[in-house]
Length: 124
Image (tube, rainbow, N blue to C red; front, top):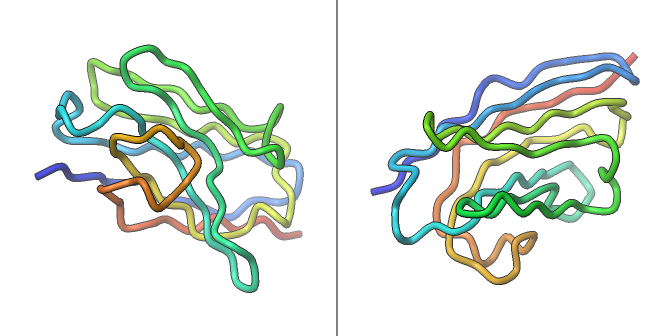
C-alpha cells in the first residue's frame, strides 16, 4: 500500500515563502507515474496546484501559481517538494499531496493515493 506523508505547513505573511514536502513510500510503486499537490480552500473549488512526472521530471502548474511555485523531486529519498514563493492570501488552504497513474496530472479524480493534508495560511 502506498503511503504519503506531508510535512507541516505554516503561516506566513503575504510575499513570504514556504516549502512543503511529501514523502511517498514506496516511491517506485508501479501504480504511480505522477505526484501532485492539490489545495482546498473554503468557498473555492479544489485546485490542482502542481504535478511532476516521476520518471522524467516533467512538471505542470496551475496558471495561478506559475512563476511562484516550483515542484521538484528527490527520487533517491522518495520525496516531492513544493517550493512556494511570493505567497498571496489567495494561496490559503489545505494542501494535499497525491500520487497515481494519470494522463490528466492536475485532475484530482485520477489520483489514487492521498496524504492527510497540511494547512498553509497567508495573512498579514
